[in-house]
Image 1 (tube, one colour):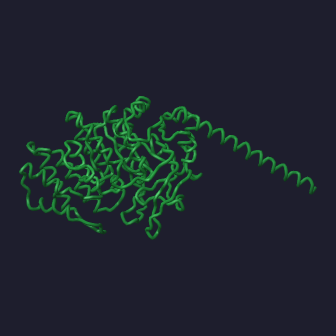
Image 2: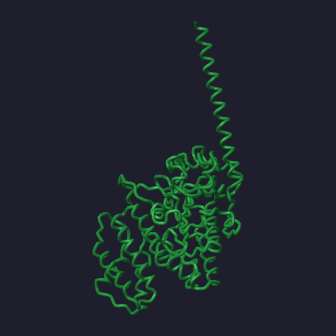
Image 3: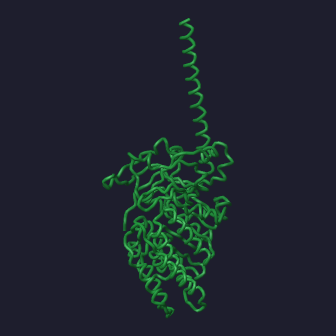
Amino acid sequence: MILGIQKLGRMKSYSLILCLFIGSLLFAQKEKNVLDWIRSNAIAIPTEQISDSLFYANAPAIFKKATVYGFGESSHQHAENNTVRGGLLKTLVRYGNVKLFFIEESYGCAAMLDRYIQDGTGNANALLKNAQQAMNTTPEMLAMIEWLYTFNKTQTPNNKVHIYGMDCKFNYQLTPLLNDLLAYNNYSLTATEQAAITAVATFKGVQKGEDHQETIHTLKNLQHRIDSNADFKEKTNALLLLQAMLNYLEFRSTLSWGYRDQHMAGMVQAVLKLHPSKAVVWAHNEHISQLPQNNITLFGEETGTLVPSLGKHLKNVYANHYYAMGMEFGSGAIVGYDADKTRVVDTITAPLNFLAAATLYKVPMDCFYFDFSTAMTHRDMEKLITKKTSHLYVGGPGLLLKAMKYQCTQNAYATMYDGLIFIRQVSLTKGL
């Protein structure tokens, strides 16, 4: 009896081992199928900031027909984020008729950068040093701005590229820029209007319970008055500056990241309404993603609600004409901050096993892109992009190796993006 039980136990153990062995073989075969498909179908992308006619020629039709492109990044700290996206922007400007470039930056700083790329007003290096987001004060961004300036010199006014800041967190230069336009038009303001415009420039820091409804009401009326004035010169710029002021005041009134994304999307829509064209939007993966996000306050307080991201707003408006392009990386240096705000530099030698990037890292390509609608036609690729997996998802706070499992989101690729760029190895960028 005892021998029989022991024999049965051994048989169960052998069966379990056999099942595990067969399971590992099946997993290995499925992963091999995925890697083979990517090697055969993904489009290689240069990691240098160069335009690539071959990329555009091989890009799928769904990518080419998009009106608005959301190009993401999984960190704010790597040089390759902007060399790769910069190359794609150049490609779409040259071959895809893109004329608008939106960045996660203050409207005022971008407006001054736009002056530079239109007619050379100012100094690009000095202007970028005044950017309100540190991720924009980099050599890679400077190279992009200089390229746009050089490109625009060869174009007619209607074919020039324009750059816009969509971030509503900042009031940088909004009041001086609007005052310049009002003076240029010799436009008279009421005392209440002048006080409202001046007030926008005075805010520093944030505090709870701010109420700006009277100022918002005054600026909306001024916006309507200027819009109704047929003789107002550079009316579009004035209307957008006023919209940036309104977005800033409304953000200060709510201090909610959800409203921030709403206003970023609103700025993109406002510009496209006034300047119908194709556009590229640069922002963190969390912003360009089509998933809703937690509506956290500026003070880190959970509100318990989900709100649309920038990408979700754009997808709702432009449907299949909005193309969300996520970006992930495999290895390289990372920077994060300890609880005491000490700067910590770590190195990822290979993606942690629980990350979806661990599979993509096995593809022997430095940088590649694949479209999800194309991938969905392959059974194992479909499973890869529709299965809920882990992805790095942190921007400003940086990345800590010891805390990486807490700096991830768990979602299926297909619910976030329309396509993905994977960079095998990244390096830290430097400030100007």
